[in-house]
Image (cartoon, rainbow, N blue to C red):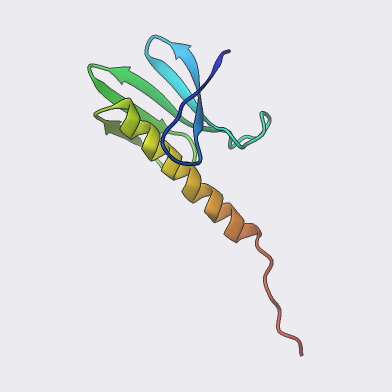
Length: 97
């Protein structure tokens, strides 16, 4: 499969993998290839609407009027998810007795 880097105007930027017939898979560009959280969403461009089926971070399908807006939403979702992971893995201070 061919990876296509898409510039969204801010970090993080998703990688897009074309799966044919107007369909793309958006992948977290910083996740490893074996990371199960690498795939973020499935995009389908149809009838001048971009449908985004979220795989991680959100539920359901969202509609966007342009690919640019869809990619911006995906990039924002990736940013929020990364910040959430950083909070989950941050060390917790324990008061000395």
